[in-house]
Length: 285
DNA sequence: TAGTTCACCTGAAAGC
DNA sequence: TGCTTTCAGGTGAACT
Image (cartoon, rainbow, N blue to C red; front, side, top):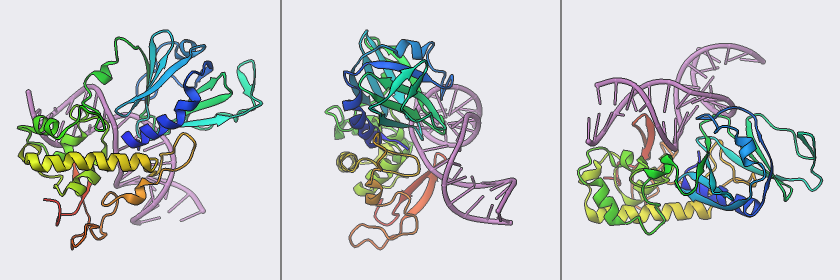
């Protein structure tokens, strides 16, 4: 379940493979994922050089020469896997040397450096689109500041939460307020800041929001350093697992003792907006 | 207008 | 052992 740290880890794995490489062949194995693929996507990708590979929120953005950008969202279960075969030789439409497509390999990109990038997504919540780089993509227009960037501050949280009656957990999942947070890291950041996920966002003091702001950054930086969290579906581009799940304090730890020093509480699971929330009712207020 | 719920989707795990 | 049910969650649309 890729959130910002997982997507950033994938980007770092793909960057040396894709940057300045030319897509020699694009294979699209189905017409859609979450949404239909853009018209003639394989044809439009073939022969294009990747000038840069960026990340915005949970989106990967491959800037192509010619002024277009390939947008990639991994959804819930999307993986970008990199393989290399020195002897890969294209004959007709089949590339000898690379493994045959596996189940759920929806898009396969072969590069002129012999590398192959495969987008595999069993649950098909992912997406791909092409858009004019300069015009931007509507999905990106509404997104809030990057949590690790200069635009995200405690003051921003104060302003964004002002008057909000919804629970802080729900507010932090709103990508318009802050980009890239998902269920796991919101639970972890709220626990680290001692704030109950049930508390109305607009009723948290500026001082506590400053603590929350710091906790969000701290948990995201730690997760990126660990290569993300591997639960069920996620893999790095190399196929390796991330290991931040070993650093979880509350997520998926229902019934275990609260890890906060001196806290007698037990990690509890509740449901908010049809989603699991994990918290310690003793030290999160 | 703001907040909440649902649908999409498949695989793993649990329950029977 | 095999079948059925439940759960996981990012996002936009529909609903309250």
